[in-house]
Amino acid sequence: MVLAGALLLGSSLRQSLRDVAIGRLGWVERALLTERPFRAALADGLPGRVAPVLVARASARVPGAAAIGKLMVLGVDERFFGADGPPAGWPGQGVWINDECADSLKAESTRLALTLGPAGGGPPRESLLGQADDKSAPWEVAITGRLTGTMAHFQLSEGTGPARVAVVPITLLQERLSLPGRANALLSDGASGLDS
Image 1 (tube, rainbow, N blue to C red):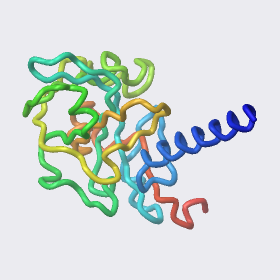
Image 2 (tube, rainbow, N blue to C red; image 1 turned 30 degrees about the horizontal axis):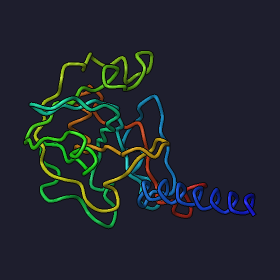
Image 3 (cartoon, rainbow, N blue to C red; image 1 turned 180 degrees about the horizontal axis):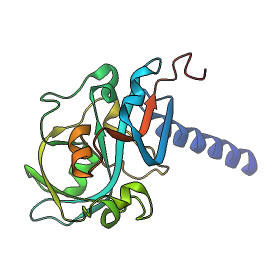
Image 4 (tube, rainbow, N blue to C red; image 1 turned 120 degrees about the vertical axis):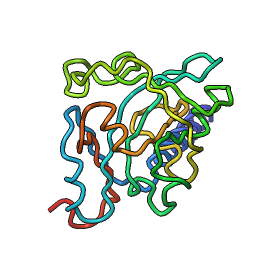
């Protein structure tokens, strides 16, 4: 009886964790994440919905609050938001944060200081992103709004902790990292013909 209960509980927990993981992918069925950036325009000729993304790890701080780590900064275009569409004011010049990020910062502010790259847990120095100009000085950006919809909790990494996400227009992050026209991830809805 105890063994059957343990198996049932284990199966239930496994299913719950699977549901959380799948929920964090939103519309994405397939993802390619590389250490070396490639031409973002590569996404343009592929079938289905394919969004180029520039992914960077960061830490963040607002005035009067402690810094938070394990923040995923995504440089995206309108394709990332899927059926929900981009947030009001997109593309703009600021950052949109999700509720988990805002709650972790525990402060109301209109500005956010992002520390990208190795100081923020980003790419290794030996990778191409790590070789970009030192961007460890905080990047001050305006908090434009909150992310809502299916992609507000998007996360490519494993784990069940909070998915702290900040989204900026891809061109802004490309400029900040000195990687014009580049991406290091492709997100796909898994349309037929993608494998050919």
